[in-house]
Length: 337
Image (cartoon, rainbow, N blue to C red; front, side, top):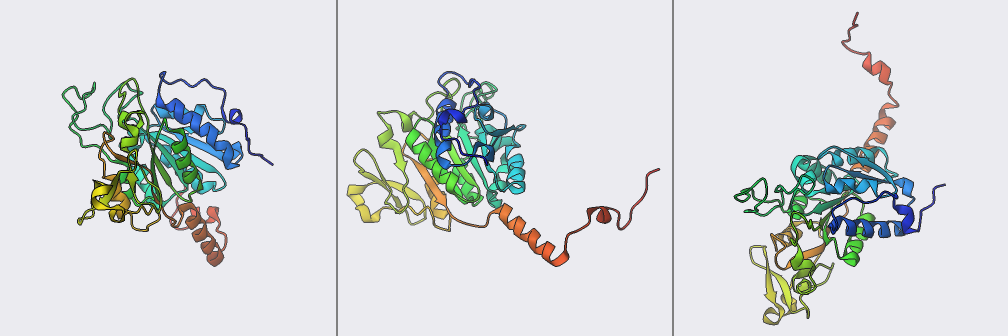
């Protein structure tokens, strides 16, 4: 019987991680290697699937089963694995280019189907592996090698995209905040169905400092809006600022002293309607000011793999076990000489 390895070192493959010195991927890898042993699941029951990009190397550094897929197809492979082998814990490691550009269609359909996979989207708002082109999350006007006069595309808001697809679990965290990152990963691991986690990840070569507002010691207390279920949304060094809902449903940042705590939005991550979570996702379009982090939504609904198994069980009970050879040879067939 396979036994869960409790030593962090047992979860490291022994391969030397090869990212640029200072890359946020190192911090994420260290956090995940420390977090996995506490789940009590044997290494042989984990599969990490990645696409193409800097994040794609992740599967080589974790001592579990792993698949390095082609560009944008990690969710397609992971979905098949999760449905065929419900005994496995399937995790997808992807980037903003890999999953939101060529892989965008696979992502939204996995989210709407509620396939039991955990999606970790490393968002550095740039194409790092191919040397600094703008990505689907780069801001308008971004100067890069592929947009020397500024990017014209309007960027994706990954959380709003996931909530629009009615994902059952949606969260955001930071690469260098070990405690917060680990807490979000625990919640994602415990969730049944698709868990979508956006991780702000610094690319110190091609997009350095994109998230300094949220991670720098001098500014993070002013700008991290930490969402906690069933708690009023307050932030700031003394909790002096908060979030209220306008009459049109959108969110607004206010001084608590001006409105009183009773006027603040009480975060409800378990609400069946994603509208409030969607409004919170739009509270900050860019991580350059006060920005929500934490679990935006966590609800229970039918998991795709289990639903498919239940449907097949009903079909077998009604029709019996089929004969594939007879089926293929029935009807209008022909022989090839």
